[in-house]
Image 1 (tube, rainbow, N blue to C red):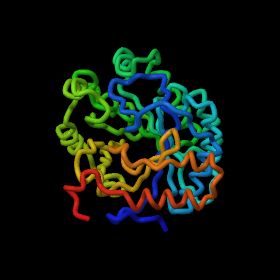
Image 2: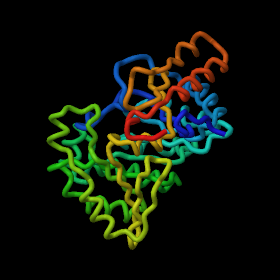
Image 3: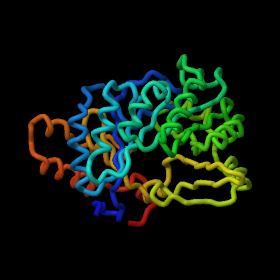
Length: 312
C-alpha cells in the first residue's frame, strides 16, 4: 500500500531528474523547477533510493532531465530500475535527438514508454524553438524505431507557441494518428521562463480543446494525472490536453514526488524551499531506515501549492 499524505493523496510516482545537461536550449524550458550545477547521482545510488521508494508503495518512475539520454549510463539506470521487484513501469521523457542510437539498448533494459518533445514537424520551426542543429526527421526516425521495438505507448509532447507552431496542430494530429502515437498538446506555463517569453508566446488552449471535442468520440478523464482529459478521435488518434499548474485541480490529484539530479527529494514542483537531501545520507553509508525516514518526512510535509483552492 502506498503512503498517503495529509490531503489524502497516495504517492505512487517518482520523477527523477538524471541530469541538468542538455544539447538543446528550448525557449520554453523550465528545467523541471530545479536550479544549480552539482555532482549527479550514480546508477547505484539511484537504484538504492528507488528500492526504498518501491517498498513504500511507489511503483512508477519517470526519468527526465535536462536530456536524460546524454548520460552515458542511461541504459544501466533503466535496467537497474526496471528489474526492481514491485516496479511496474520505468518511462522516460526526451527530446529524441539521441533516441535512434540508444533505443535498442533501452528496449533491452525494459524501458516501458517514452514521451518525446517535438514542437514542430517543420525543420526551420523546430530548429528555432530548440536552438539545435537536429531536424525533426531525425527525431521521428528514433520514434519509429522505438515503436518497432515494442516501446508503447509513445507520446509526442507539443508545447503550443503563439505565432510559431499554433498553426501546425492539424499537421501534428495527422502525424501522430498515422503512426499510432498519443499527442499531448501542452499550454505554455509561466514557470521558469521570462515574462517576455510567456506573454509573447502563450496560447490559451481552451479554444483548441473545443475544436478537438468536436472530433472526439470519447473522453477519458485521468484522475491520477491532475484530471487531464484524453480525447479519443473518430477514425483513430488520441490527444491529451495539458494545462498550466496554476489551479487547485493540479495539486488535488498529484501523486508524485521528485528526485533532483543531486539527490534531493522534491515534494513539490513549484517549491525549492523544502528539499530533503538523500545523497549525503547515501555517502555517509547510513542504512535504508534513514532513507525511509526521509521519504516519510517528505510525504507527511506535502501540502498543495495551490491549497487556497483545495478543501483537504
